[in-house]
Image (cartoon, rainbow, N blue to C red):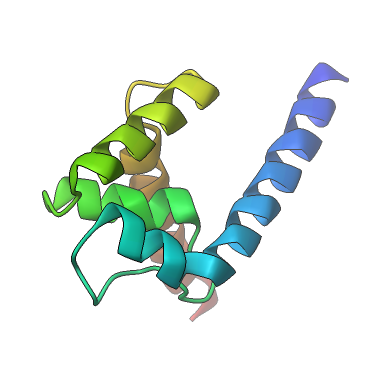
Length: 99
């Protein structure tokens, strides 16, 4: 039962994260000087977009602060990077099994 509830909460949080990425251009302008990022792209979360920029070393000081806040809120050491790695793995699985 607890696993089912956890899955439901994860799905809701993931959906909210996708919804926030609709405003990605605003967030992008705050956390990086990079103009060509994953922000505002379909099926990419704010966390994943931030993680890709973090891996590439393209976050400004506010972006690093934002990533650290995500780590604190979600109780992870590298939430944004993990979100990006999750997205890459999910895309690979979808290509392997559904294309």
